[in-house]
Image 1 (tube, rainbow, N blue to C red):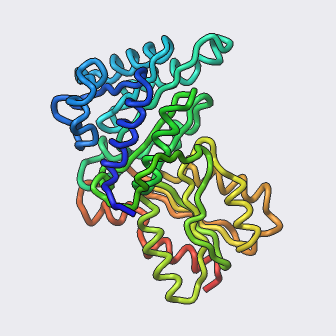
Image 2 (cartoon, helix red, strand yellow):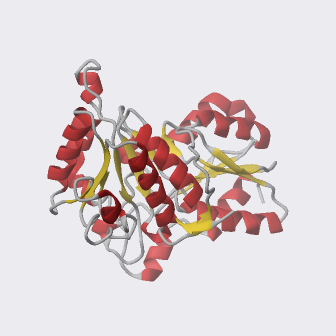
Length: 325
């Protein structure tokens, strides 16, 4: 199977859906003439023209509002934020318009659209450009939230998101745009709301999503060398959350560790941990452990960045703790 970059997988998903459905269009800062801030939309202006690949001003609230209005009137926009840190400028349109219009209009209006772009840390970008907003948006009824961890999932899930009748938040990692992985050449879709059991194991369930999956893979390799069999699950979608896949795994392994790049309070790991203990308490042989970022704004110095983020050592230590080793 061929290997392509994460950015190429996203581009293919958008191109295929725009060829399939003339209602789909892309708008955002630098998506057209500059080929995208991260070159995700490279070549798309040449193929689809300026009416379907639209450069916007640096005005997230304005172009997010235009996208919501377009979706309500029958189009299917893909609204790119250069980073989800900038989506805070547009959050009123995302939450109070896109997410609620179907309910507020009693089904008379829908907003089938995708808000996509990079989220969370990407090196030394400072506190205002390094936040993970996954759990913020997942807190909102009416939105679906997807955080893929590899090129294959990114393409299949983005195609599904574009076809979905609901507004979808599609969060990527800036550090993963050049990451390569196997992607089928034939058309495929990946179901929204279905986690992926990446690796079967018997001793402990390890759950994550997004770019933290890369660190989990490294941790699993180290733990396997120590004789610990890890079942690794990639959530892929965090609203809706696939509780059943995680709970079924915990019933087999009797232990759970959750890893995410987010502050600990009101996080996805908080929600998932609560639900597992409520629905599978009698199966747990140890308290649930989680590995999150430090509860502080992200520092700038690279040594502090590494200390702030979940790493292989902390993940391995958490797994060994639930194994009482």
